[in-house]
Amino acid sequence: MSEQLAARLPGAERRPSPEEMARVANDLEGRSAEAILRWAAERYAPRVTFATGFGMEGCVLIDLIARAALPIDLFTLDTGLLFPETYDLWRRLEDRYQVSIRGVRPEQTVEEQAAASGPELWSSSPDRCCELRKMQPLRRSLEGFDAWLSAIRRDQTSDRAAAPVVGWDGRFGLVKVNPLVRWTFDQVRAHVRAYDVPYNSLHDQGYPSIGCWPCTSPVAPGEDPRAGRWRGREKKECGLNLRPIS
Ligand code: SF4
Image (cartoon, rainbow, N blue to C red; front, side, top):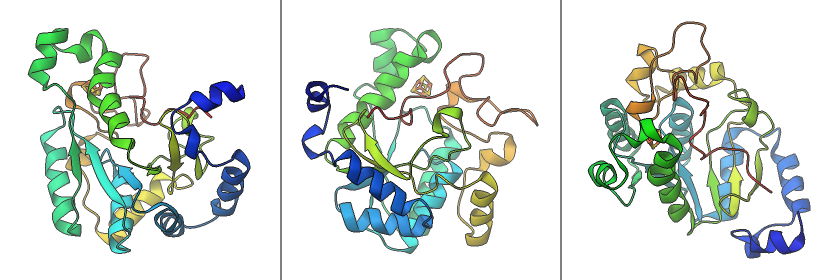
């Protein structure tokens, strides 16, 4: 990438050097999720946040953050189209850990979006729907932060397979920290059991991956865990955790 283009990307003025990012990623690669979270809090608080989608991995991160009392902001993208079980989980996590998880809403309600763009935009143009209900609110929310956490794991998708523990996220112009990137799903489940972490009851009803209700269906045994997201379409990601441009 040319220096001119790099200078125009979001957050370019506070971007750590590629050498620094590579060194930190290397240092943190073998560390525990708790140690990575502590590093993120010490390095970036109060300008570090976790945008949770309330997947099981996200619940584990909230458990780790809350039990260590780390000063990390928490928010979720409340599209207005979450399952009732997800709203219930949101409240249970707040009660259990005595934390506040901010709800970030799109500019338009579902009804306003239908009036402006047509009914069920998630069927006619899911990319546009995700842009309006997730990506725009996310961009606005991340503007006040220097680092954000994600709960992605390398073995979830081919796009996530090369995700570093920490790296520059050129899509949003801040540092991205992935404390669970080396975990397997079995490790996530074991942590949930060991610490009695609240999780979405839909996981026990055939929904390994849960997003908005219009775009999420249960999966059959043996299917890819994300097969129920935007079923029948090429789309596999809403865009939050696509590989960062650097
Ligand atoms: S997941 Fe579906 S309903 Fe939710 S914002 Fe994306 S397209 Fe819209």
